[in-house]
Image (cartoon, rainbow, N blue to C red; front, side, top):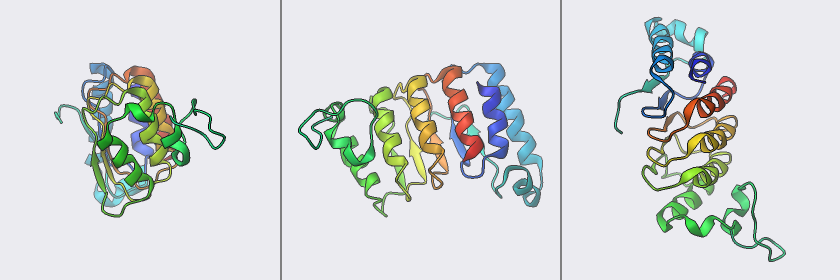
Amino acid sequence: GASSLSSALQVNTVLTTLGMYSNSIGDAALADIKASLAMIKALPVADRGKVVGSAAAPSVAASEPGGGQGAGGEILTGPVEAATMERHVEWPKLSDNVRNALLRLRSNDPSLSSLDLSNKSLGSIGAEFVSAVLRVNTVLTTLKLGGNSIGAAGASSMSSALQVNTVLSSLYLHVNSIGAAGASSLSSALQVN
């Protein structure tokens, strides 16, 4: 879980901020992550890149508050894909604002480098939609998803996007009940990101 997340943060080369407060990962695991980050930050900036592959050490914000029809007319279910998300059966359940933001992300809108989707009741299916567009987005650097109850399944979806997205540098997942399983998924993704 979070112990492997701590190790992953030491080798990650893209993500510089990961907000994780109130995710049921446990105090001991959080202490492990903080200790790992303190070790990285204690290194001279020139040496950090040698250890973590980046000049900037990652940080964890531990206490910050911070559908449709397919080509043949069928309803699409199953995994969400960016190219067909508007035809997915769950698409209409998202708010207009969230759907519009996802469409802008998919189109790589250059004016959208930061996006706050906190407290939008996304759940794990909403996290799948966000993950689908992150796989193809090359502009967004900051994403806030706090308070969306994405759970371990949503964290797993986000993990698959983080494995291929090389632009997102700040991700806030506060109050999402990702638990140890979700932290483990994120850890695996951050080891290759």
